[in-house]
Structures are given as C-alpha cells and as structure tokens.
Length: 110
Length: 113
Image (cartoon, rainbow over all chains, first blue to last red; front, side, top):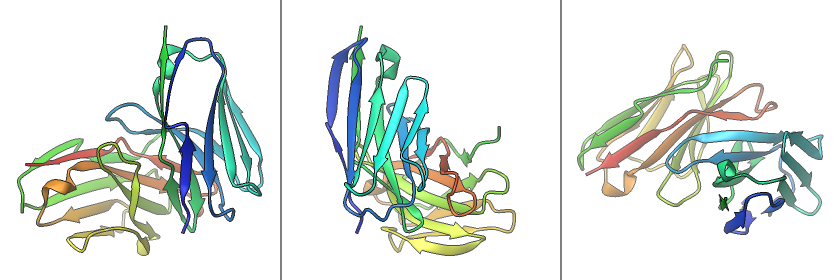
C-alpha cells in the first residue's frame, strides 16, 4: 500500500528565503507525482505535475524534482513571499488514484 | 478554461439526514474521483469512475454511494449522516487515465450537526 510522507510538517520562515519541501513515498511504482497548494478551508490548486517520464518541472519560483528509485520528490520555492503561506501537499499517482502526503504547513512572515 | 464544478459549496445537515453532492468534470475528461478531507487531515480517496463505470473504491462507508451519469457528471449520496462525516468533499477529474494530472474542484463543505 502506497504511503506518502512529507517533511517538515510545518515551516515558518521570513520572506526571501529559499525553501525545500520534501516528499517520500513507499512504492516507487508511481505513475505521476503532483504538487498542490491548499489555503485554509479551500480547494486544491495544482502547482506542478511531474509525469512518469520526467524528472523535473519548473513554474516561476517553483521547481519540483522526482527520483523514483529513492522514492523522493522535492519542491523548491525560491525567494519566498508572504503570499506563499499555505499547506503544500504532494500526491503520488498510484494504481489509478492519487495518494496524498501529510502536507507541509508553510508560513512566510514579512 | 473550464474547471471542475462542485455543488453545493456549503451544506449543513442534521444527523441521520441524507446529502447529495454533485460534480461536473472538465469536458471530455473520462475519469472522476471523490475525496474526503477531514479537519487537519489529508484528502482520502473514496471512489472513482471511468467512463461511467466504477473503477476503484477506497475507504468509502457503506452509507455512501456514488454514480456517474451519461453526461459524465457524478453524484455522491450520503445517508444516515454522522457527526464524523463533517468534512470537505472534493471531486477531481482526469483525462486519458491521468496522463495530464488531476484537476480538483473547489470542494463541498459538509457540516453535520
């Protein structure tokens, strides 16, 4: 059974810092890996999708990498801003459904 | 661009009542998924449909049922509601067996009192 874990569980940093959010999964036979952002009580906004044949994706200040052999994905956030404050969820596409990680709650203060 | 539409956005029900949540996937997406997210929890997979047929089932209580209709919209029916059913319910859709990822709706917040 696929299990997805995210470290750290919470992170509080001053704005401007470069951040690393980690995601690990137990079953390397994932198809895609997707990173989402969720604001409190709100929906899931897709940030980056790393397809099965890819190892990395970039969008603006965000960069995500995927290493299936080690069962890890990393989300880099460059030059963090207060507007980046949210919960970040990684999700592995495994057996035709997404399995979500436990999330990293990020707070960026001015 | 069209997104996944869920209705209603908010729903308040009493214990033992029935609730119906609706989901309209992105046009031409062939798979619909339902997820439940309890307070402080990560989303948990409930059930999915591929081309109107149930394709997978997760931790969905027997009190819940779902179906996908000919126009591809889906409904999640929840009966004998319990306080613990209070959660955010998300619908997602994907195309061609998720080759392009999953798109989620804004969710329905169900509160059982």
